[in-house]
Length: 179
Length: 108
Image (cartoon, rainbow over all chains, first blue to last red; front, side):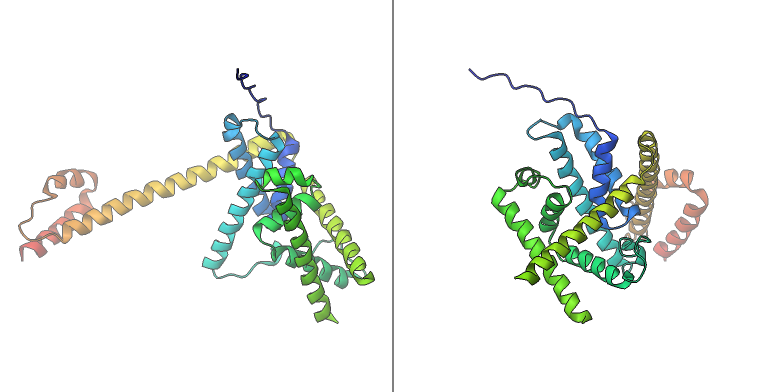
């Protein structure tokens, strides 16, 4: 006889969840205003859909999935707006490079390295970027990343490996150019 | 080989710096208790804005298309005549002028 399926726990959203979502959006979008916008949209989706959460995965996994999709949508929209307005990416899009914490003798080297990392991340596909972020920044187990990305463990391993390789290649190219 | 290891280490250091920067930026978020309010206000004002644009756009599109259809109808076509009183009631000045002009063109 089939056991009656247990009802999942109700989804509770905490400020920490919001912070995690914001951080992910900031990684994808690179600047505060866009990240805040995307985080709010993702948060709104989570609140609206929480009744539909079936408990098939952990709440955090479900939230990550919504946040990743939202950040990608905002990114695509931003790219379209930039294309329509024929404007180049403004300087404020890369505050990580112009971070006031970077100063002193090695300022130029550090800025170049940071720019290299961002450029490397930019060169990744959406799926590579997601796998790279969740593995290297959120330090999630690959198994959980596979659930978030609805893919296999092997695919996650491959995506993370490819992402690191691509970033290193971009960095190497930039270093060779600067020599 | 050592070059590769050096590259690996450098990338990991850089990732750690980037992660720290993301953490710092996240720490600058408003106090948790303020999040729902600001979230609600921003969202509401934007939704209201979109609703106004859609409503105005739709109304304008209906009026323009209706007006064009009415202007381009064949002589003797009576379609749309029954709308005249309604339109005149809604936009007396504009419609009267346009109708007068259109009637002149059609009757010529």
